Length: 191
Image (cartoon, rainbow, N blue to C red; front, side, top):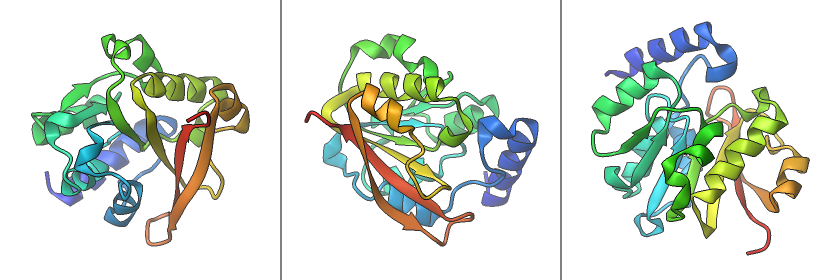
């Protein structure tokens, strides 16, 4: 699917449900490079929450992550269908990321990182808690969760970070994205 078709897919999905999609256009390649900047093939399997049409997925693969090492968690059928065609060797889980801990995958802790394109600022703290809790159940103890936001502060409420014993650190801001976006690395505080 060409890039203009990706933009149309995003626009239609955003118009149908702006709180679920969070943006009328896909993230830029510059933001994708920033959010994946600490990822390498030796990190192992990677979870991607809300991959949309795959801008971050492409950046992960450009950094050497194999398709078969990707778990793509996408609720929107319009996006999941595109992902299935583009990344046939990736595992695509068609579900709400807040239900990740209920999946059969929750018994495995072998992912080396998680990348999130989810609009956490548009979600209640209880849902953000479920998303991070489920993701960290699938992550290695020293693994990080990377989240971008259009705000300047971490989109995960401080109460959620404390409850899950997590810490957040801004790794950068990409001004060339529209709108500008910041990326945060979230990890376990006790490691």
